[in-house]
Image (cartoon, rainbow, N blue to C red; front, top):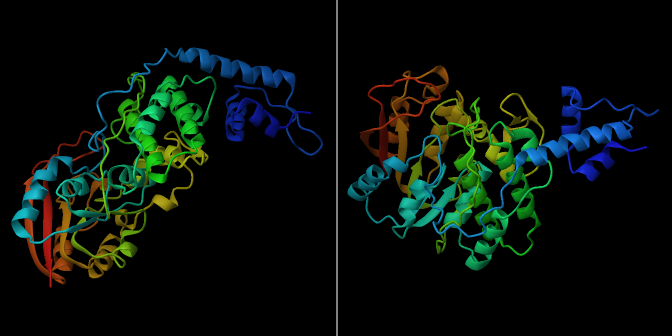
Amino acid sequence: MTTTKEIEIKYDITRQTLHNWISEGTISLPPKDWRGWFDWKVKNEKEIQEILSKKVYKNNFQQPNLAIPTEKLNIHNRRYIGSKQKMLTFIDNIVKENTTDIKVVADIFGGTGSVANLFRKQGKRIILNDILYSNYLSFLTWFGNEEVNQKSIEDKISELNSIIPKKENYVSHHFGDKYFSLENATKIGAIREKIEEYNDLNKREKAFLLTSLLYAMDKVANTVGHYDAYRRKMDSLTPIQLKVPEMNNNNGNEIYKTDANLLVRKIKADLVYIDTPYNSRQYGDAYHLLENIMEWKKPEVEGVAKKMINRKHIKSNYNTAKAPEVFLDLIENIQSKYILVSYNNMAKKGSGRSNAKISNEEILKILKNRGKVSVFSTDFNVFTTGKTNIDNHKELLYLCEVK
């Protein structure tokens, strides 16, 4: 008798994959023994071997280029909903012209870290936070304090780029020919497994490899910049290639992955920058796939979008009707000379899911309870998931000088 567990180990596939193939009719239903357990026969194994063989040879991997890309990976080389990359000059000018003696900056909804990086390059000490593990890993890369062996990172990224997968894996089965080409999905899974095998890395060095993979995935993803859905037509066929992230020497930065409302009770800064989620679109849903692969717990997924079934740990109250209440709690407990809030005037302009959860009036009222408030605005192109044309969209900065 051959058990399901033995099949899993022999062919390096998950129980869920086997059940999916049975449900799809891709392989025959094995007979069951007296206990109700599957008893996998030679016929079933031949069917599995045929599937895996087709997947491997259909990939047609080319011999990879072993040279390390000379161009370094930059923190800004990533697509992200609500990214403030195009607003950095605006933010920089407002802070320089309206604040004094800023030495410590806290960005408590960090996202990609682009705003924090603006202040890092100015020599400020950074406190950075986000609830997404994928963002936390990139923070360790760009803002971490641990020393990094650059030669070791370069050698390992060259090795990861040289991998030629030989078999089915978690990523190729769930996301191949969907979010990625089958070739890229198979390689992503193989690279992620290899990173777990390295035992000579410190926490930040491992984050370097994972961040390199994350950014490389974003470059070849068959999406419009998020993972709520993938394109029907596979048009992202460029082979995935990892790059070496830029090396930053940091000292004294603090990096967190926690609830921002809890964090502000524990930290002190000269300037706290706040860029809360704007609407009901959960970032944990938009970037579920990146979270899945970075965490590498190989959870079951569901639906057309192949989202992790359990995403409670990456849900935010700022995307719900509780937003005004939790924003009030946040502002009341901040310990800082200045509070800078980035928000937009979406209000009722977009679709229901795009509508702002906190009004401009609510933000202003809450901030005024802490001190003098000035409001600044700039024109900004809004992200929408459809083809909505939104006129007169502005990004707002509320600067509160705390009493």
